[in-house]
Amino acid sequence: MRKGFFSVVTIALFLLNGCSEKPQERYENVTIKEQKSFSKKEQDLVKRFSAYWHYRLKNQLDKSYQYELPYQRYLISVDDYKSQIDSYGEGTKVELASISYISPNIVAVKRLIKTPKRKYTLKDKWVYVNGTWYHKFFQNILPPKNKEEAEFQ
Amino acid sequence: MKIIGLLSVLLISSYAVNIQLLPDKNPQITQQDVEALKAYVKEKYHFIMNESGAKRIAKDNRILANEFLKKGLLSPFERNLIRVELEKRLADKMVKNIQKNIKISDDVIRSYYEDHIDEFKEPDKIKIVSHTFDSYEKAIDFYKGNKGNPGKKKDLGIKEVDSLKAPYRGFIEKGKENYCIPPIVLGKKKYNVLCVEKYIDNSSKHIPYPKVKKRIKNILYKKTFSKERAKILEQYK
Image (cartoon, rainbow over all chains, first blue to last red):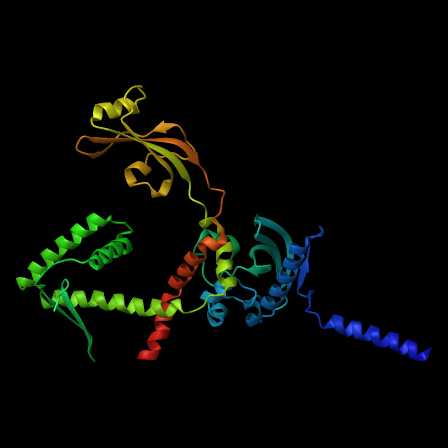
């Protein structure tokens, strides 16, 4: 009886441990406002969005770089990438407000930026490539150079 | 020894690329000369020359260039300009040659395609019929819709709108069908009226990914050209 109890506890601990090893999908600095049920493809987007913004807010740019579009990474080195980003201040949080489709594989994600002093809304562009969502990177150091940059910067 | 065309000798010395230009004793052109001229015009002016035209121009150029050299008109400055142009061409080829061997992953190419999907649209097409007349009066009469002499009629089939030559393209209206464009003068006693029977609007159709893969690769190579050039230079400086 006692042996059986220990086996159950061991399995439970193993499962818990197994779960904790999975990639983290929820972050203290990124929240999801939208309550509607997401499709599998959208759930993947929410996960990628959360991880990406977690790294951006934490200034872990080597990690957020991996979420940028592959062709952008081909064209922009990680050092150039870092030099084109103005970091967010301490205590900033991001909330995913809504997702809207531009085309079947491109979405605009509205995000709410909450800093200790103010709240404002910006937009992200995410592109679905070979089964994975990637963020489109726009520099935020200089004024926008084109219409798209002005929309998503 | 058979001398073909301008005798141009490239000598890679320790200082620069040396060019020696001498007049040809027998200024005959070869098929390779014709092909080279066609490729040059296509690359520089995006224009495809026909075989006979290319042959004639290659021969004419050869005669004039030969005379220029025979008269000793090639100044050192002109020779240097030719060298600069040649060196730039060779330098570009060097970089492009190395770039071609750099593999670009499918994710990179595909991501460019998805992000720029609206740049990869199928071109609009039209079904056209050509009517050729020996007088302007007959051509304008037909164009104005007066039934009668349709001239020499030729069904040109379906063509891409953008592939039409400038004077014709300017008259094509998006979506409009069953109309003719005003007569265009083709030559002496040769007037052409082109009639559009059908307009195929492809503005919502995208070119499938496999068809544009190579084009995207070239776009990416162009975008990384300067960076790649600097990297290659580091090895040889």
